Length: 95
Image 1 (cartoon, helix red, strand yellow):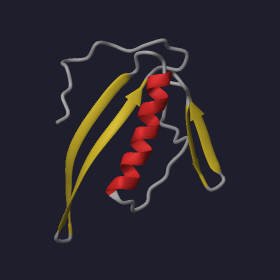
Image 2: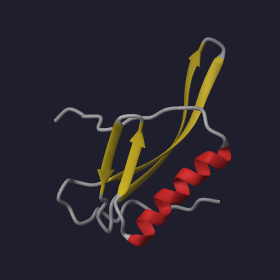
Image 3: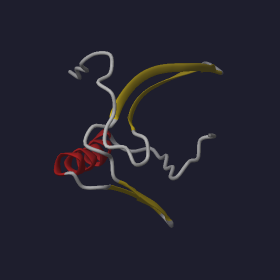
Image 4: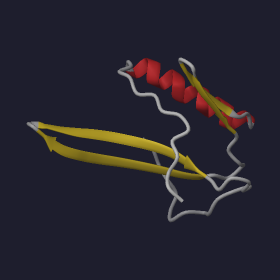
């Protein structure tokens, strides 16, 4: 099945602003609440299961002209209607 983008937002933010968004997601995960994303007239609410798959990826993309783009991506994945994910390939540490 092809990928369907349900919501997308991209904008320059300060590190503190990004941390605030990530904290809100973390608080909702801790409390078992759904995650609601809103930007302008677009919105989506997702309710991750108790054990979604958590993917962390660091990438270097480019070159685009003289610039190389670095990124870190945090992704939660689960099958619709699923109650959890797999155990994965190893314990993640973020320092």
